[in-house]
Length: 237
Image (cartoon, rainbow, N blue to C red):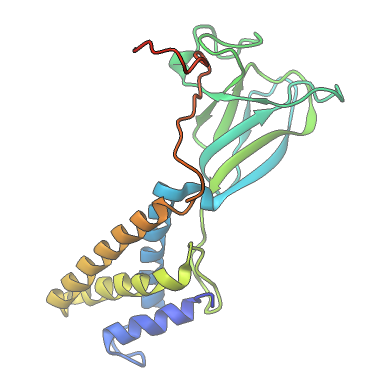
């Protein structure tokens, strides 16, 4: 059963030994829950980021180099761009991540590729994504971005946790929130320290468990450059 904000808050009050509001209001508890919730989100992203992956399609404008990233953008996973949307037979090409130092010409160059890469490149500046070379055609849905989304705070009682196996990890969010609240005014510092120590331990256990969430097949190495495809070659670099 999906765990809601109310479920977690009720669990926090068990840890606080406060069934009804006395020292802590619902709003204070909700704030502490969201702090622990975002803690868990960043840990999940660290080891299993594609759990929060999504895809966004947008268009390009001829002569426009930079485009706004989605409002819920956190990390890029893959970018594909069709430079010829007017050609029904054209396909999208994967763009590779570049930095300013990678570009040995001007950033606005119109070459087909850039040194040292043999394909289009993209860069991120602030909340914008830019492309080299600059698109020369206007087209709808010819830019595809796979990215890791951010998550929203839990705000109403019926909001559910967006975590892998949330039923298992919801109790640790309650534990972390209780530890934070007990530190308020140094009311129960010893108990708070114990709660927070257990909280960090359980978060570490969650990280180890999620590392093997994609447990199918054997571990492999991916050649992302493509310079050497003869894996029978025993040359050592």
